[in-house]
Length: 104
Image: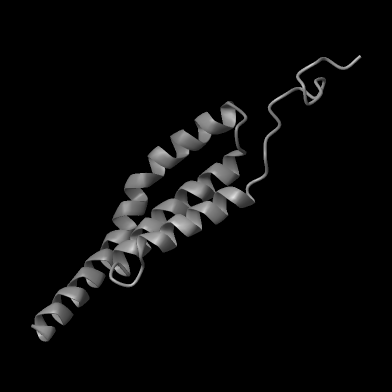
């Protein structure tokens, strides 16, 4: 049973390693289109949107590689730290105070 688990673990890791170029090539058009849309809406810069998308793809591939060792709590903690470190976008035009009244 141990040998069977070891063989399947090695085969899964080989499959993930061999699938990395295919996944990156398949994801590139989608990533670039999404980054262009996000940059056009001025929500993120194009470069940051592309890097963020590739980071997510590579993280998913890493989880496929290290599945028994990485827990879902690690993934949730990583997402929390990543979203916490992003700069906050101002929602108002700066002419309103904290109560929503217009400055004079």
